[in-house]
Length: 168
Image (cartoon, rainbow, N blue to C red; front, side, top):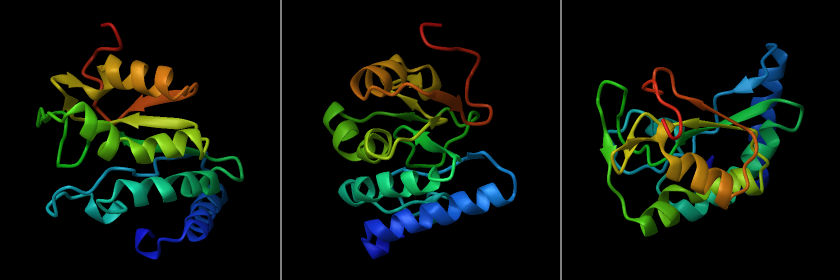
């Protein structure tokens, strides 16, 4: 999809995904995957739209609005900085500067939320600066809700909650 650089194609693809989901009786789509590709060995590379945050953000909103056009719910994943193999058991901790976080890892999510109207967000398995993404006040409250005005639901990746919520 990203190889097309075509926003209209992203919307059409999103509509197709949404229609297929509806045809099988689904409501939630555990997609769009908006991770930035950082290493070629990452097992989810095939599901991503590359390493360019500008390209990703220009397609993310169209993809998500297409997915949700007929009433389905896109669940964006993996929020955030999930660019390598991680699982609850791996205890992956990502250290990234504030600038890189906002310029590289978050633009696709921001576009899908602000311009695409995404209704769901899934947290990533990894920790960011030592705090699991699912329990990160920086990610879940400060950025997602306060900065971007997101008002809908978040879920954890399977097994990714670690027994805590915001503010413990």
